[in-house]
Image 1 (cartoon, rainbow, N blue to C red):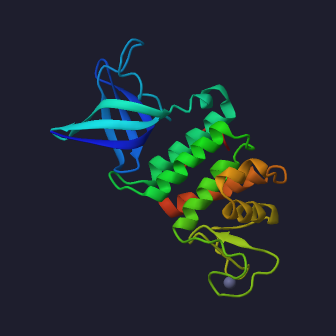
Image 2: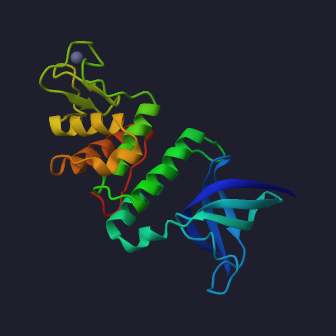
Image 3: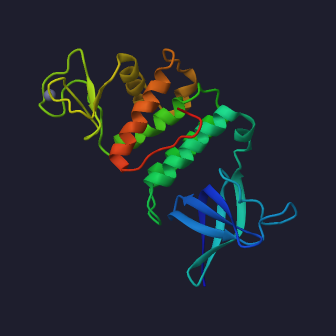
Length: 241
Ligand SMILES: [Zn+2]
């Protein structure tokens, strides 16, 4: 029986057997993995801490015959405030959905974990306009994969990009009008501005931003479509689009 500690956030939680809960954790040290919280259902359960999505804590896990059992949780932040604001709640749920879809089991990524926690903190505690944080989070993910949305030249032929710029969803990069494929979409200057600004600032500065109306929603729609092309997986983003 091996035991280990890790800093993790609950990204999904479901009932298991009669009284237990299973939680999907995304951790700094061990990446994503499932663990069981014994007898976690019921108000009086001492194990109910750590069963709710968003709970960020230091988890003590025991691995018994291949099954991870949570034997202790020191809560760092429950992000409880997310449950009292529906817009913030949906946006934070979107962050959880993205993390679930882009990570592999038991593969850690310290930079991604740090961004993930920062994004949740920003949504929960800062006065950010709706969708700015999730847009930033997606842009960060694409940039960390090497997609820079270079606005200066066409990624296909290298020509200088002048007035019209298209995002080619097949390759996740900007192209000129001659190189655009059927699966390309023109990016409005307002959307390009959002991408550029969010790429260049940290999460702490997001509350100071104000974009032109609806550009954050247009940006999210485009980033979501681009996500499908890069990860071969759809984002539902319940309540956001
Ligand atoms: Zn071109």
